[in-house]
Length: 198
Image (cartoon, rainbow, N blue to C red):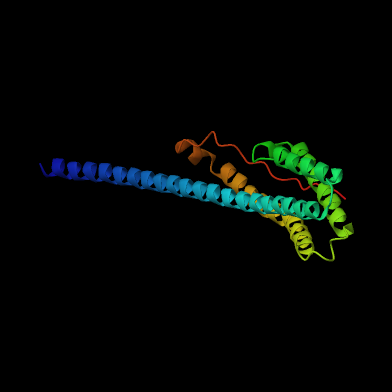
């Protein structure tokens, strides 16, 4: 009887130890899955914030360009066809701007950058050549605002790309856990390829 109870204790201990070991593995896997989920959500939030900051700044630049054209138009006695064409091109910029999906095609970014850079140069040149430039205090302020916003775009894109690099590496490192938490269909994000237009 003593031998049987001794065997029972050994078997029970072995089973208990095996179950405890399995629970430890489950707990560690569960914790890692939670960690991956939390980091994935943090990356999503950070990417959205970085994107929104960049687009908001670009929107401010476009609004300043509209305001600059309005100032120039109010100084004109008659309708200036050059300003009308600037308005049309500015409206087109809104339509051709890249999105987080369309930027996977580098041509979309290049087209937007080329159109934006050319239009900014032409509008600023027209404003600075205007006879009103020295007399209207708002014109130099708008010109400076547009130039500064135009210069910041490279920094915003570099920050976004840095975040995307980390996010994409995170996806590569955690493929197994992404499957486990049903995020295996998540795709890597495209990066900006800064196109120099000089």
